[in-house]
Length: 116
Image (cartoon, rainbow, N blue to C red; front, side):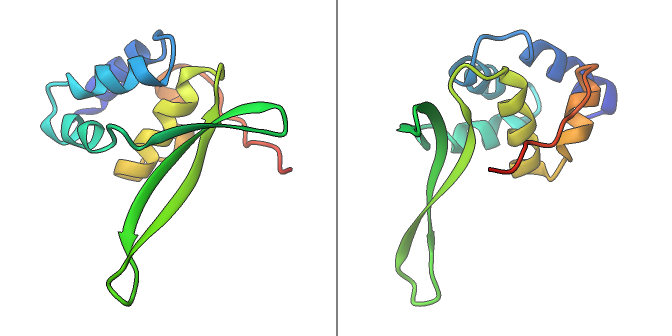
């Protein structure tokens, strides 16, 4: 994917309402790698209420050293957060594009999350 195509895609995605809509849009992208990466994430998100917040997690399994499936949970965003949080997570998790670069493509400034 060319840089200008990436910028256009990020700008389009940042206009969407939330994670489900952005994931569906990513599945329809012409770039086969991006579409396949989005497809591979289908059904891997879970919503949990923690400390009064609705948090969205990426839940996935990987084989451990003994060859057994082990479940992992990774925090993605809170429900209601700007969809750009998910978009930047997606491109970092799947393609190692720094979150700062995704925010720049959207014309925004990336702020490191505060530690809790």
